[in-house]
Image 1 (tube, rainbow, N blue to C red):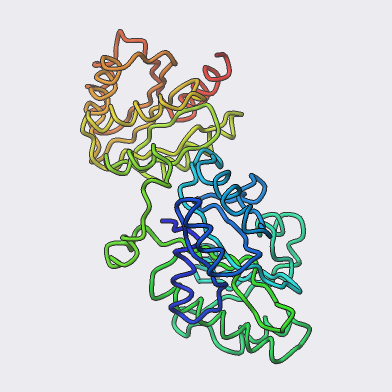
Image 2: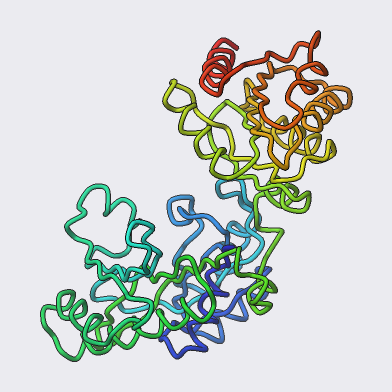
Length: 379
């Protein structure tokens, strides 16, 4: 679960991590009042749950009070990667000497949190990792011991040219980040950029906090921060229907049961030259209604050229999936080809239900993927 920058900074502020003076606003008049309170110049920043705001024109510096209302009006309502900007953050301008990156994520290989830091801050850390991975410092954290002070100080010394004062200040911020990461069950927490001001102090100029969805049940304080209006509408609809859906950029729509099988299916689509249009897990149950909803969500993606239904029936009954598929075809005008690989519980009954329809059957997962990729490419 993602939260907005202003919400992440409220968490930082509560933890005594230094952040700029700023105010979240939902209309230009509020922005003018905020700019008067903070003092010019200010930076107006779109609050959307995607990256690339700056490149899209969603982050702009404003020096004159007369321009605040105009610029705020231009940013509010604009679309950034398909998401409409409903709020902006009016923030004081920082007198920056240098920019850094610091973040904590879970390393799935070592199965431990990792403190990452870089002197190449201010740009996407993925770009730094891809082009100059040697610029990223990494420290594995033993969950039993936590982030030890000498670990974060060593990283600080490497970042700040062995300046002991800055290293201690960095270690203090890193320690607080780790405390938030653990206490609130985060999957990611980062400051990019962490800026060194001309007065020698460190400031979290931007903030990103992602919570682990699987731990939301024990964090009501996290759940209330969710902004459904700022999330991908199809993902929200899927969640409400008990489906796990993530939109991707390909043209092969996927309906799969189980996250592992869904990942394997997407890998196989890419192996055979296709691109998955989505991740969609119908879960362990198999009510026909869930299948209908899944098909409707996938078909609302105009990039989809073929749909692959890949079900390994255990708790999920293949005949329920087939009935759901047939019901979806009755309710919607499905113009793209559908390939179905159904195996496991009640697979024979499912195949009998689909016999005589225009659903293309497949005996194996590889066969199904090859057929779906070919059909998507042929449209």
